[in-house]
Image (cartoon, rainbow, N blue to C red; front, side, top):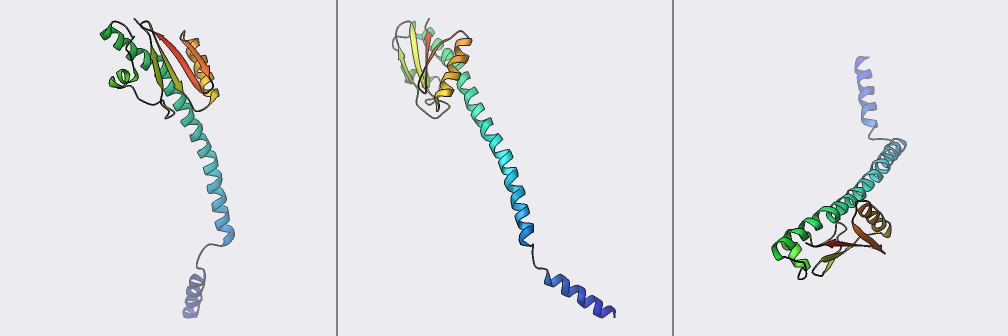
Length: 148
């Protein structure tokens, strides 16, 4: 009788070969919910980080490099983008777009493109709150830095 019982147990083990369709569907639904919850949060965090890095670049990095250039050259009339990138300033914005610079003896104007008009408006709001001269034009932030 033990031999028969043991054969039936082996038969039951061998007859179950995988998961049922219902079990697989439950697992897929759980994975989908987890991806939805955690995936959407990480996108927002990336956007926030890009925005913060742009604000730092406009409020700290550009003024630092422009001041460094002005101290070495007595004014900013000849300042071009290559001068700033030579000081390790990034050639593109945090959004991967090329910024431009125009200069006079006493001022440097940086046009800093973003990905959305709302980002440009929010950046300008934060920069003007900090006492800087900034305007938004579509997706561009235009900042005027005084020189020397």
